Length: 298
Image 1 (cartoon, one colour):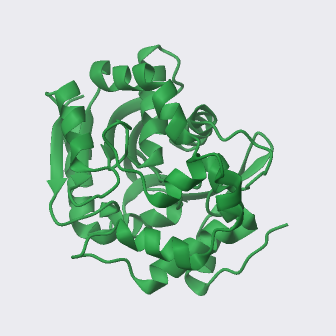
Image 2 (cartoon, rainbow, N blue to C red):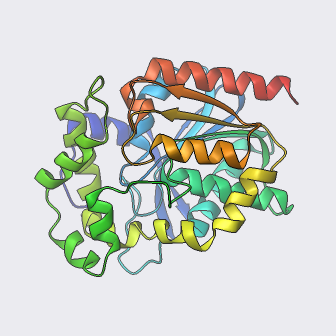
């Protein structure tokens, strides 16, 4: 049974989508019919597909899909689940397949979602992906963990006292951590912080942080697979980056470009970890251009 209190904006968001079943779990899903390839939007940690609301508003004619990974937002949050990125990639592949119906898929991925996205690239290279992936944009994800700068919350949740840190998580600490990853020019609003906290707390999801943050360990374990996918995938891959991100710092972008110098990259100056929230018009302009270039390259 669902627990927690949702404000009006979140309730409207919930009603705009629906619950899809995947392996016995309810996944909150938003689908918009429209033109072009199916745009699949993959959110980050610790937030949800609610991050994409302005992207969706600014792309009213685009066929797109946004959903909450298991354990996040308005999706189920089982306490005994092993929250692997491979499982989340299976979920992504299944939902995208349902809504693309055999048509082309373009993936736009942020933060945690970037590692789900690179797992999709690895599957595509191996001929194991059940999607017609026509292009991908990844942004502000700590893909190269050795170059990233995790927040204090991530360090605590990832450490030996992670379950205790999750148990005693509170809104005041969340607000301080969340506000710190936005740029000075585009600070997060009080309402957005309240919304994000309520979504985390829905179904006691704020008590699962130590499980959800395990994706950071997987980035180490599967580095060769996922870095290799970035280096060798022959499709249309592009990068964008908020250059004032204190977590997925610009050095991560530099490292990705050293790894593969031919990649196109757009730098959002004066923007922090959440370009799609901080400067949605600019963000969508870049995404639209990237998608258009992927179609012309086919």
